[in-house]
Length: 246
Image (cartoon, rainbow, N blue to C red; front, side, top):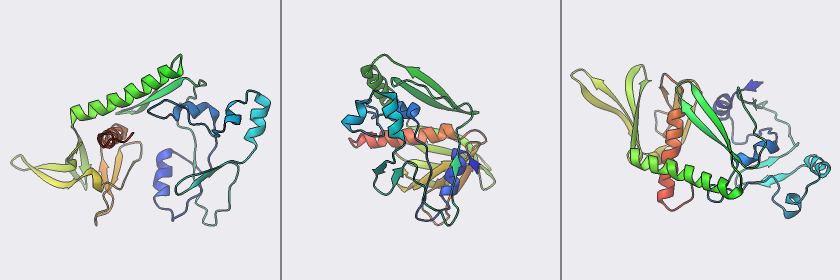
């Protein structure tokens, strides 16, 4: 059945230890898979012989071959779909208005707004320009996260009007105002406790800190992608602090 990306995420959370996903390799989106430090494209087949192929005929012939890329705990295979006895196949089609920019020297910016995610496509002249833009955008997000430190938004949790505050060092805090304008902290968890986060693309944000109360569902009353992107930026900035590439 057709499902959005967020529907697929929610379905995967309820599956067993092994999941089989059917994916389709599309050359047009390969420019978006970049090494953040060098801007180099991550190709499907990084062998020198494949990179030197210029004939469209050879390229089409190569597409018919099955390829396996071993990862840490899974693999991606092309045109190889084993039987699924539990019928847990999920198909995620392209989002509305999805555009594929046919250029190796391009990049996309996704911005969270109250009404959804806005995508802007850009192209550059050289690989060096692409690497420079990539590095500047990543560094800019990290610097902004370190400068802002904390972001707060109104939400509803368990039927109560609350405030969700996300601090780059202190983590997540959910608080509410009691009679007499007293700010009461209902929940506080550090980033290190966050095990999983997801959203429905409309207004719900799901956070799981591995506590006994289980998954926390927050109604943000608007598209949650803005908060999701902020969480990712804070996490990336924290990783960069440790001297690791984010």
